[in-house]
Image 1 (cartoon, helix red, strand yellow):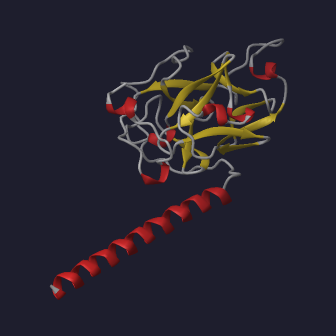
Image 2 (cartoon, one colour):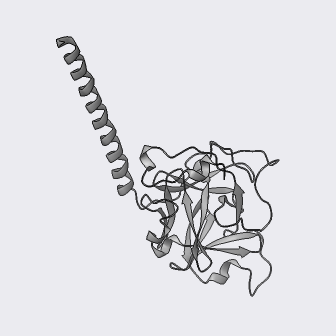
Image 3 (tube, helix red, strand yellow):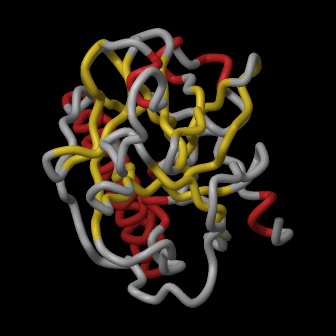
Amino acid sequence: PRLVFETGYTSNAAMKQMHRGISVLFVSFVSFCARGAKIHSEAISDSGIATSDSTGGTSGFQLPPEGSYVAIRGLKEGRWLRIQGCQVGHSSGGNDNLADSATAERFKLVGTGSGTYALHNTEWNRYLIMNGGSLQTSELLNEFEWAQLPAGGRFTLQPTPHGHGLWNTHNSRWIINENLAIKAGPVEEITAALGIGGPQMGVSRYDFRVLHQTYTRSCPGLHISHGASCKADIIGK
C-alpha cells in the first residue's frame, strides 16, 4: 500500500508540474502578444508558398462570397498578407496558389455590414486591424465576435483597375504593397487607388488579388482556444 501511495503521489506531483509548465507557457505567449501589439510588416517566412499556377485560386476581379476563406496577394510585388501569432507581416513567392500548410496567409471574409468586411485568421484566432499608420492584430476573438472590433478592423474591398484594394474608412488609408512590405498607406482620398481623373495606371501598390482558398486545418490548439470555432472545418465547408 505504501508503494502505491508513493507512486500516486509522484504521478500527481508530475501532473501538477506539467500543468504549471503549460500555464507559464500560455501566460508567456499572451504577454508577448501584449508587448508586441504594434507590429511593423516584415518578411516572416517564404515556406509553405506554392509555386504552381495550375490549380486553386480564383482569377479575375470577382470577390469571393462572404464567409469564404481567402488569401490576399499584392500584385505589384507578389507579397501575401499574413498573421503569425500576434504579428502582421507578409510572405512571398508563388503565383496565385497557396500550399495547404500556409494557414497564416488564409483569412475568413467576415461580413460586418454596410459593405464592409473583417479579415479573421482562424490559425491564430485574431482579426486584422488598422490603427493609424500601422497594421495590427486584434485580441483573441473568434469569427462570430466581430462586433467587438474597433472601427479600424472593418475594411471595404474596393474594385481597382487591376484587382481589389483594401480601404479603411476609419483611418482614411489603403493597405499597400510597397518597398517589399504590406502595410498601411498614407492618409489620402479613396480615389487615389481607383484610376479616376487621370490616365489608366499600371499595376500599383494598391492592387491586390483576393483569392478564394480552401481551408482544411483541424480544431485550433491551446494558444488560440478562446472561443475558437472549427465546426466548418470539421464538416468540410
